[in-house]
Length: 213
Image (tube, rainbow, N blue to C red; front, side, top):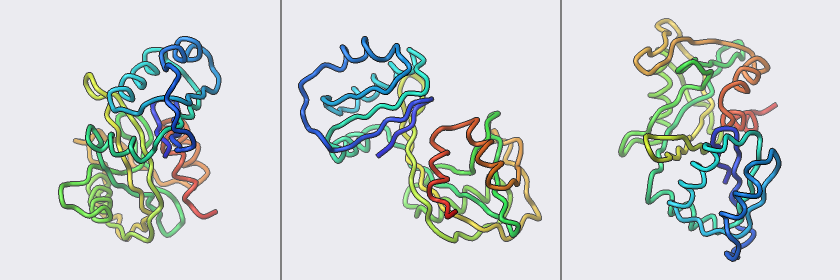
């Protein structure tokens, strides 16, 4: 599992289950440097993850990759018990094989939104895309899942995003959903889309791994 937070990519694996060394010592010696950090021995309680992400934010660490070796199943269960938000969205294509981007709160993004209680993921993805962009779409395939974290009041929220590939079937009433902070819709080729997304959210760059070349 890969979790994105600000400019950091945190990779969880189950390669090791040893819990002997101190994360605090590692923070002091490593977080001030622009380099890869390896954490091998931590207990993945939610309050620790929350504090760890806050530490990254406070120290303004850029372009680091953190490999956290732990019990990924237990970690995931712990996050679910706390503040996990589930969202769904789409990579929308038109007949010219262009991709639809939205500008949300000043950053380029892909349309997505929270899954409602008892709502199926594909239904939520289709609904959110159509609501945010004023278009009609058909889902063509599932792409994959991304995770990212972001500050929410005094805590850290973790969002799981389920992505689908979609084909736009009607653009007659296309318009950005202003009340959601969306100010612009833009159709562009894949190369341009990758360039624009690269200037916004790190987690979205993983989407391209799911798109057939």
